[in-house]
Length: 67
Image (cartoon, rainbow, N blue to C red; front, side, top):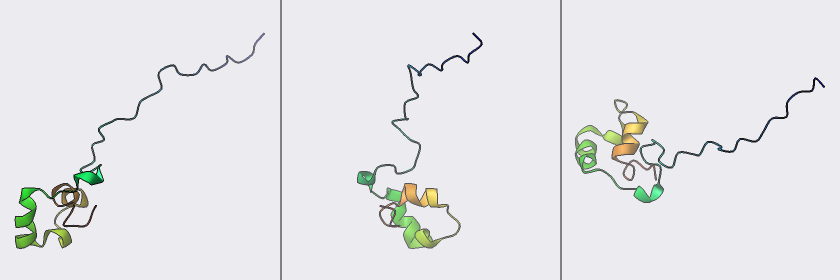
């Protein structure tokens, strides 16, 4: 009859990744890494333009105010 095929629902929809690769996806893990103390003391880490936001969030989420 020349009609378009009816799209079938996908039986296996893609599942969201339970472990996203974000440095600090869970606010309850709001803990600075041991290296953070030295970085803040010697390099003004949280305000530094040398380090990316993702690095700051990964190393010093609490001290740099990300959580």
